[in-house]
Length: 283
Image (cartoon, rainbow, N blue to C red; front, side, top):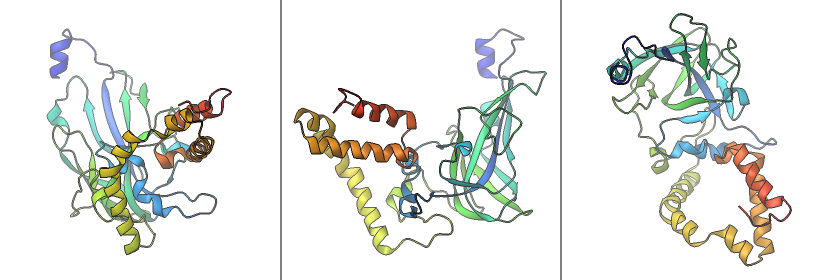
């Protein structure tokens, strides 16, 4: 409302006119690759999981990762744009999801639906996944996701409660089982990692290796990258074996880009640069 008063003439229509956020509960695991269990990479996937990001980017329609939708969609909140105030965004809200499939919900996936017309609710722009909401044409946009702090058991036909927290001015949606404690974003990098739903707990040896890895990642890796630009060094020194190692690494990332937090188009350009005629060693 404040922005409308400052920037618009009286009677100006705001487009979009209405914003609605909807969500489902999902059980998310690591996908098997060629029959190989990849649970060891769960603490690192998606890549934003260990960073202080507002949400994780996913796309249910692309089948990236192993997402099992467990519930029917529920509305998180609706805002009348041009009328609503910042205080109209709820800071806390209990959400009640109706189960469709049995599983352990460890993620909430949500999307937006914007009503472009003030009079015709059928004219909308949305990034809703078509596998959940088939009313709209699929888009190239994915959805947002966040972990549920404290897994929630879901059964078909049963209603489960999840608490949504949105600290005022933060605009980060956080979800937890009632009574569970919220972890700070990126905090799992400093603690023992949780295994994906249905998997055995990680061994003590794995946990210790995980902690050591994060120590290297935070303290040593930035300096290592700064001091050893391997791509340039291999190209300038005509290091054939070094260039081959870089190419093999690029092909591995191109085969499963989402496991490494890389957009497919980004790694495709890099692979093209490596293998194009005259492209050896270029980035």
